[in-house]
Length: 393
Ligand code: SF4
Image (cartoon, rainbow, N blue to C red; front, side):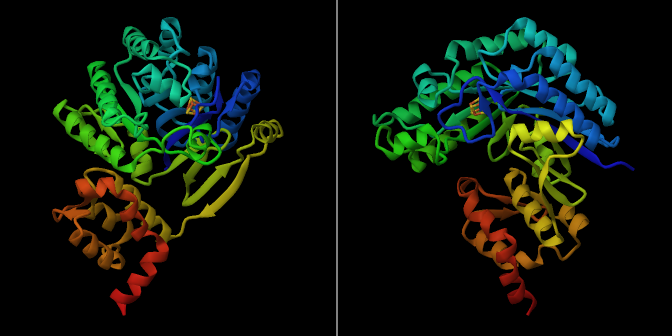
């Protein structure tokens, strides 16, 4: 039977780079969109072998810079090279200010049934600080237009942990205002990301030369905790460290990643996990387009994922889920002894109050969710060898 996969399609174009952006995206190169769309179709022809597709996801970049006929053509290529049912969850990331009513109606007709809006904040000063092109009015309007176009599965991306301009309490208050307003817009799904400042981004430079205060991790933790309580009270189920949804509206595509199941990434810089191998395409768009025109793949990294690394990644990704890892799922996939090598780590993390177990699931505690990285590194392959010696010796 053909392998079941999630299909990711990377659209690397943006109107302008945001101040914190470290993604593979190019500003001001929209003239290359037609060649890129042809290359995507070519790659699907090369790598599509009738695999059953569970979900499709247009990520970016700004996929809403694609015109509706391009979206329709890419979906049609996906359906001819893969076994992709019409009702599969099909998400497109869109930025407010790049979409209008007719656009949304057309992409919905083309087969997009889930929209993810990069709202980030509902405050013009903060949107400017982040270097976003849209304003809060356009963000609200985008939600209204999406509903009017018939979208019933809507995600809003928000960012917390933004410096509060030096005013005591301002960062928290402003975050609370954004979150309250976002919930009032009634999305089915919310993704909340902490602002991270990667080297080489304008916001990182502004903090480095003192033009902006550095983000405060304690303030970010406080904002995250507020979100946990507020969204819980508002009827959203917290199902992954950074994600909340109304019942039944979890992002099925991202669940494939968190369950460490197979996915295929099409496009520049796209990553895949198929047939036990992790693959990455070139991050150079010219190289990608040339490779496709010559009828060859653009894979520049190809790593076999051995059983140790597979187990490690499955545990780390599974712990991102709020329900945690189901012991029986792990046993079925890796054998009954699979957690044995982590016995010491698990015991210590349980004692430290970062993990909890109810006998069916092993999961992060509320405090563990704030300190996830401190938990995850304990499950990396280098660390398990040391403990395996102790337990097995
Ligand atoms: S819209 Fe997204 S991908 Fe594009 S520059 Fe901004 S953060 Fe980066």
